[in-house]
Image (cartoon, rainbow, N blue to C red; front, side, top):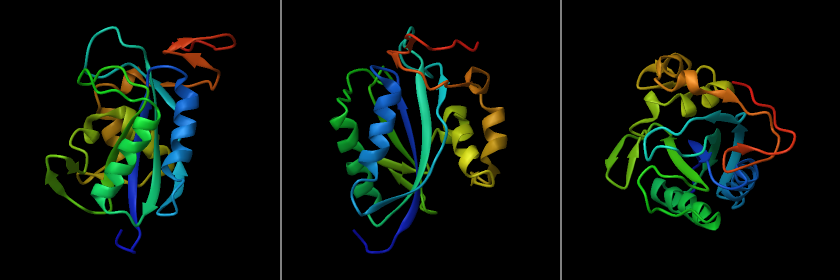
Length: 181
């Protein structure tokens, strides 16, 4: 901890189990310690899996902004602890997961550290990160470009769908869900 608070953007995703419930609980877990303060929460969007094995369930994705006095590596450890609390397993690269938490930005820090590259190296091309982020910070930029423009240019933009908020399991609608495709 450094005592000074820095703004960070975190992206959350889930495509296994009770995805909506997992995301809701993960936000609470992420901001539970006093060293992490919640600034904003995006709406949830549903997307196809990007990369990884074929046939994965759809993801629910969202973005939160926080301010933290944790160092970048301490924040990474905290995010991974929250993933582990929600039974995250790392068996297949970009495979299905109960919870994924990525640090997209940490203030203006640029880092090429192999354990934590900042800004996130693929964020500028992922609508599932950029679009929800743009809903809570319309004027935000990444790589010198407005995130809303980057979102619209991303290959996965057409696969974004609003999440209706009804319960679901493993990306399949349960009773009450409305399919919007």
